[in-house]
Length: 79
Image (tube, rainbow, N blue to C red):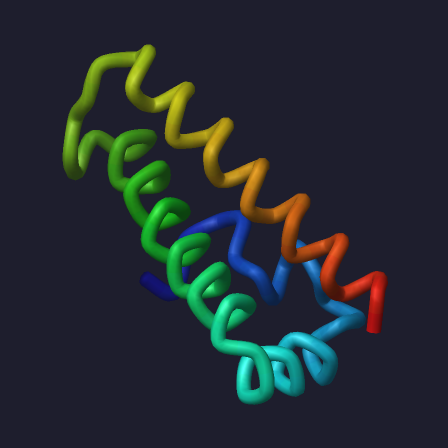
């Protein structure tokens, strides 16, 4: 979805080169990126009522997205 907020490009606009380097060299990092994108899409679909869900479930998805983003940020900082 091209208009989905909180994409990795928005969250880490100055780290796109590092994101790419880690994605191709670190399988765990690549999985994190995929998982982040999947969860971010789910959150966006819930927010826009494309896929309505219980508010508590949406909050849990947001928490999971934040935890993954934090791990991505830690790994980027270590490079």
